[in-house]
Image 1 (tube, rainbow, N blue to C red):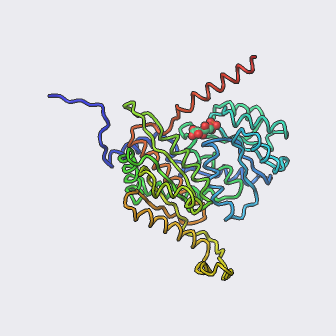
Image 2: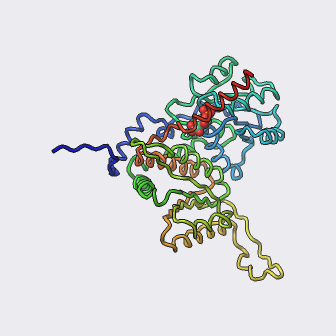
Image 3: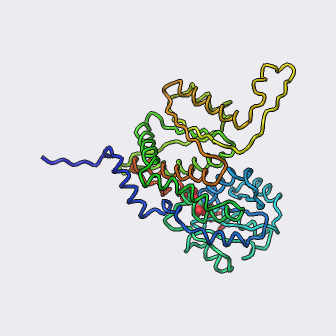
Length: 404
Ligand code: PA5
């Protein structure tokens, strides 16, 4: 008697790990923590402009924004990083109004080199300031049209390896070049990512942690389809946005059996969203997992003073408390309240503090988690066929307009 099937079997931890190891031979992001950073640091040393404007969108900006937003107030940076991402005209104008364009280095970042948003904004910049090799640098694939533009104009360009996808590219030139230029320690960034890389691939603590989590999220995805990241620091607002892109664009796919897959990312900020989305978590449908992200050390001692306000004496228990202690206690209270309900899957990631390695470790952890979930779902995390049709329609419409 013979038996054949084409349905997805339950897969063991070892098999998943083997699949990731095979993928590591082909997919470039896994190995970025081991790269040499000299060319970025060398270039950064000679940048004299005060303003650094990154022009790009999606994977070409979100990761850099996440790291910069996390660290910019905790580091002494003498350059300012700005991001031009959207075609919203008011956003473009208002951002540019506040930047001295004659003291600006433009970094145009696009893997494909032809993204409408990026190139439209770059064209607009040409109408405001003379763009040349002294105030513009390009980050793109080695054979893109944007590379051709850079070559024709004698501009410096940096490579995005072909096997590193946009949303997985933060630890390539895409993130490291601008972050090095503004004065962040990119070796520490890679150190943080490498710590998680080594722990996972050497089957230390991140091995079980990530495989167990990915397995849970996928096996229970029909019950808990929404994955809420509840970040207890406004500094993680950029990370939340990056997570939403990474999770949504990587995991919303059709699997090898033509079944639609996907997990829905939500990113919220504590304590602000305690006064908003938390009600839905606590009493709404049981379709969500919660990951609370806490910052162990804010390296900030801002305090609530020992002040009694007439009429508000019953809030004197706040006196003398550091804000960093308060926000972490608020996170703990939320975690306890969620756990008391016993029916909401919840995990807590506590990152070390306001330093390069901490945010990088968190981001690399999420990249690995995304790859693992994709493997469990039998989908390709690295393409995005769903966003192509809109781009084709837009191009047709714009070309028709041009012809009429
Ligand atoms: O993750 C992705 O691949 C996308 O989000 C891209 O980063 C985004 O579309 C921008 O593409 P490009 O870098 O080619 O301009």
